[in-house]
Image 1 (tube, one colour):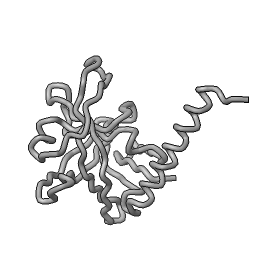
Image 2 (cartoon, rainbow, N blue to C red):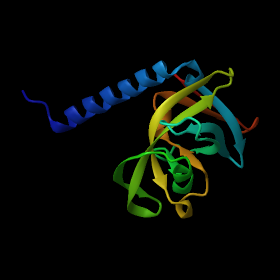
Image 3 (spheres, rainbow, N blue to C red):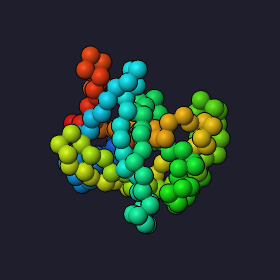
Image 4 (tube, rainbow, N blue to C red):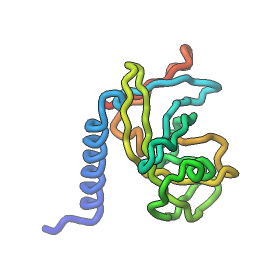
Length: 162
């Protein structure tokens, strides 16, 4: 009996999630546990963003943890200043409606609570600064496979790979 399209799509999604989990584990222990501050009920993280081809082009950026964002984003003016390579252009549906968006590649370095740094190369949506107040949005594509805990009493958040 042939399998239906929804079954195939579900299996492909599960395989993709397993690959992403394996990529994160290979990235190093420092990337497997992150933490940061909570201000006005918004989770913030500090990331070092590097051009994958020239590590001298780097910048420390403030990212907002956004569980409602499917993909992670960077402001286009910052992507241009770091000369992040554009690898694709895809439609993106967001709060500003559907629009074609550049996809750039960046190397993200995160320092975990243990002080260990680990880097991972990821595609990011490049959004115009009029559409984005923050420098970066840390979306679900980077958080998949982990557990996010937010402590509003201590104003801290923690994410770790399960």
